[in-house]
Length: 259
Image (cartoon, rainbow, N blue to C red):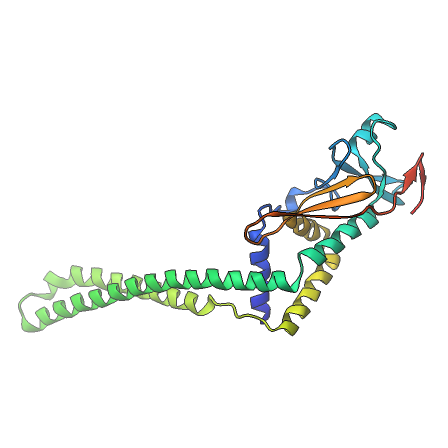
């Protein structure tokens, strides 16, 4: 599979996600802001700094605003919590099966688009043939002397302009048809690109990583010692898939921190 093929499949993966959030809409520096919620009271988990920025954690909004005993939620280590979610997204979204399915679906869409383009091309080609025939008849009339050039010049000019437009449309459609097919990849190539995507999810700019995660994760709910991720998978039937896992280490009790 070529780089162009992979990029098209990657774009299709993102476009199929029901909730794609543009990076510029986000201001928080916490990766899971707006996604993480408390399973006890339903409030959002809010990213907070501590010790002058030495520590970062997520805390239930109720607990943060109203104090202890208002919610049994625990403070979560932000780096470990975010790493847990990233790892699970890699495992659940960035898989060989998903990429192959995306390539297959994109190919189906490309085939449908190609059929549409071929239909338009046939119509344009028929229009070109009709214009050419009309011009030939006018030229024949000139040669036989039945009419003068002054009589036919406006009509000839009109048909030539129409001919020019149709030829431009034909060239455009032919170019589109030449570029509209993605070929299925071999297993080795799929694995290599999956690894590249997984690496990019960990190394790319914050806004891109956050946007990617928000495209495929509907909610991250923490209840006691369990984290539940709800994915919005971009595959038919676009159903939500839930995955549970142990909660990452807590970081705070009574203002004292530990990992």
